[in-house]
Image (cartoon, rainbow, N blue to C red; front, side, top):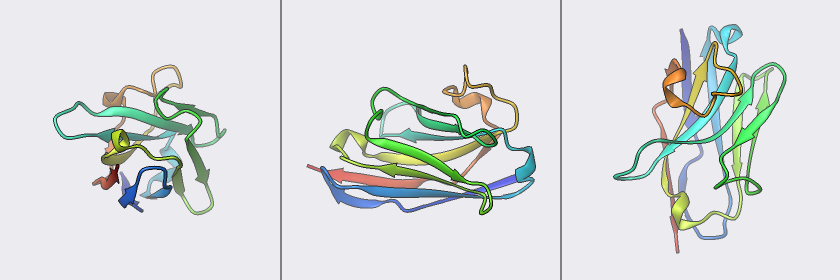
Length: 126
């Protein structure tokens, strides 16, 4: 089993930055990919970014490309999501998720992730 705990959410104004962190524990050696997803009220959960746990390859949704950066610290078993130039449409609950087998070609599909954190709220005011 893998346990994930997110932190770093909050309320900010448009244009500000936030840094989310996802701490993994348990069988972290089995993790292949860590992804970030978000869900706004009344909307489906959507892919934000992902990182390959061992190689560090990254991928982003078009809506956040150039503004968000995902990174990992294997020694600390954490993955961070640096979010810059935040927009009101970035408001959502952000979840980190871990997969033991997803490939980079399908890592934007949430059903391929076995483990999920509890989520952290990000609210961006205009």
